[in-house]
Image 1 (cartoon, rainbow, N blue to C red):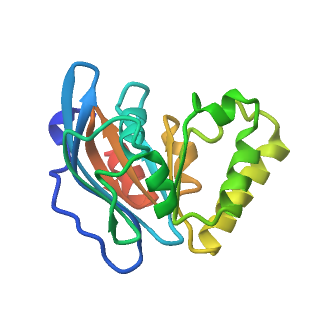
Image 2: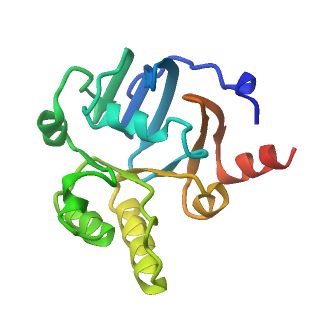
Length: 198
């Protein structure tokens, strides 16, 4: 796919039923400024942020996690503007982020354990970087999928990244396909599969 097909970032504002909203967020991807990214994750919705390695998915998650600052734009959760808040304040507002190099995984806790612990804390939105990475056991993979479905049923919003587009589309309700820090395509799994096949 060509970056010239990037979806124009339209203004987003929190609405009833939104767990997370990004409104025209720009961020650093290496030496480049990229974006503007607008997206939303609804309550009880599993949303995929998909694309190849190096597309900017993890860099955007670091912005959501307050590990790096957005260069422009705003971030909302549960109708609260969290753009200027630090990590702890964002957690208090209901954002739980798990990256693979986070201390929780460095402490040898499995992704399954982390997601289960996150649900227990009852956040508004759970953000997970490649949750199925290194999960080779079929039973553990199925348990992880079941946990995400519990999140959906409980009204918890989930944003997950993956570079395996087709595998992720079997689980998510909607998805955004990213390339070079821009959103190329957004829609339901059927929408994205049709556009991939065009």
